[in-house]
Length: 412
Image (cartoon, rainbow, N blue to C red; front, top):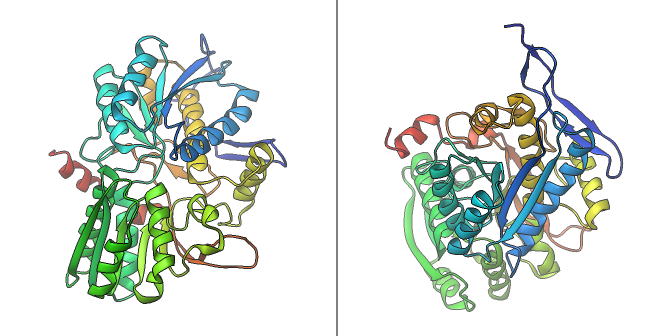
């Protein structure tokens, strides 16, 4: 068909002049010009404690757009409007309706809240509107409740649960305890971890489990109960402010010195930095982005650009926002039109260069194939807060559920 496949280009320079560009499109003849700018509608949390994650993702998105719009996308620029869903699925769905029906956006992006993401995903399917999820981690988004119009540029609970299950199994633990917050993400990550633990270590036993309500302040009774039961290892299904509370309580009780513990994103600097030197050492964690690892030119350039723009290092939401913008730009370049269906066709299987290496949008479930980093919290002289040590990179293909798993989850 006379198609030419252009290679990946990673152009990095100092300061804000950073670009990650990829061309994986089949191109035949001169590229057409889009008839107008691309309009992205973003629904996320911009008030309350979770806003730190929403704003971080938005900053990563804006950093990428500053570079993308310098060159443009087939003669057009990418514009965006935001709406604050205040960590409420009801408000989030209302905001998504407004962006689609009144603002006439070309696609939706968001959110941190998994329940909001699932609500908007159902609406997007009804409207045949592309929706890219950049922080929410429930595996149902691209798993059991996935469909043609929803994508994810962040890791999910299936990936994190599998990575942590395999890492802890290799350490020889057999007697587990599960402790988690009672909400969508808490259930999703805990169920995933235990499902994969039983798959990789059939002799693993569950000594017990403890659940507390979302936002519970006093965790001392729950963690005391776990210490008294003396399991070999504990998995905590919590995130954000809830995870920070778990870590503070662990420090007060000396928990980690008595019982090994693991939490997805426990090595996230956005959680560890506010805790300073008072965070507990020795907690196992996984994450899909660290600003200090890998020490590759691409990641270091991204960190320098982000720090110059916003005065601090990027977190995993900023990384997700950054690669989301590049997925959008490259999909439109490949599609060569603003047509939604052709944009989706172009996004499926698209592979881009990122600060952590090439990342593909898997066609079978629309899930970005991201590597995960496993490490343990530790004090170091280089930072005033704890960071991850003994980091092991788990390649993306090794943490993904199989496409057969996805089809079974969808009842196909």
